[in-house]
Length: 310
Figure 1 (cartoon, helix red, strand yellow):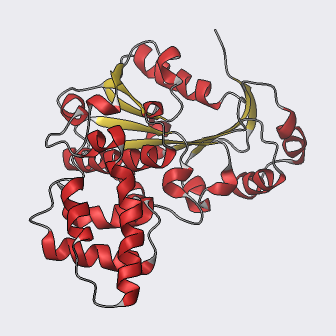
Figure 2 (cartoon, helix red, strand yellow):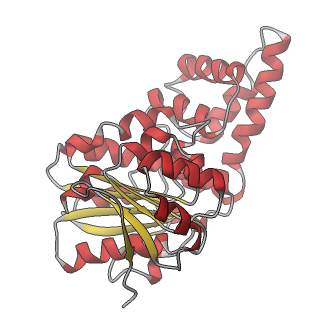
């Protein structure tokens, strides 16, 4: 079990069995009644049918207040909305000047709309910024981010142990899904770090490239993820493409479970990270569903495994 809190990386092509493998790990924790709080960011709505027991968290019934931490707000919006440098500069300037007035998305958008432009580039950047921010104010999405309470956080922090499945699949727009996940993960990490290991936490991050993308990582979360191990927080990083992830993230996981990969680029990355024996490099693209190559601390070399489906 200790290996879980030194981080786990699970990868494999679509349909190779990686989500089922993670569910088996979580079910084993449930069966052994470990006092571990497990939080799963379920990107595709798959875990409800795979786990023995869990608390189900619906985003639209568990909105989060993204304006409660103004210092982090700009950094996270810059990375999740992929703001340009001028847009980021302008947003930070506006927020710093008006931070006591901003309590919801409508207010933020209204302030940006009425900001007096000092130059033509500022006007262009402001209008582009408005277009990106308007995504958060569309239809039901505004319900996700304007809460004045902690939403599901109260349920998580007031219990020792338990499994929580956050069903991100309810959010149709994948960018909004990513933004919700990033802000909620930031709040959960803050709480986990403030508990200083009182209750161990295991966080499953599906589609991890949304946070630790090779080209555009969420920098604030990346720095936090690098620190959580010492505070009793374990991570299970899940992605179908190793190539999309920062190599340091994969290298710093002590346990690696690699299901079948088809892409030559992904195969090259995994070989670089794991130094696979030649026979494993040859068979990796042809592994059956549920088969995987496992490497963990204490192993002299990777081994071939089959995840039990019973």
